[in-house]
Image 1 (cartoon, rainbow, N blue to C red):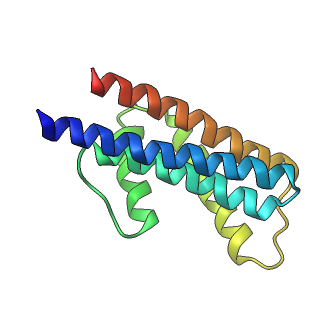
Image 2: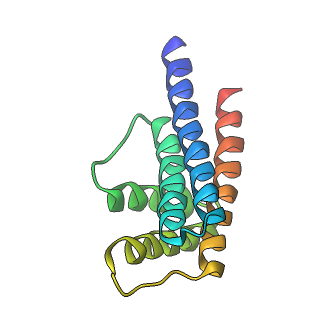
Length: 134
């Protein structure tokens, strides 16, 4: 069973990375860097998703593949609530707009939503990992 324990520990490591990245998002938000806060909030979500995928020992090189797999196997099957799927998609869109569209100016409200989504998903993933560890 050591292999299973190692897998769970790796998933928890990725979740800690998600939590640390969320802390960065909050610091950036507090310092009025909305673009940076949106980027870090999205990556926090992304790392949380990858922590779930670590349980299956699966990963992908492209973000869209990670998210598509998570949506297919965890959102559509309602292991995680369907509403979270749309929140993840919104976070990805806002991050891309923030990072790549020179004319995009993220709003305070949207940035808070992204941080809230990251926090919500982290809590769900933590609960999910705890059920797998027992």
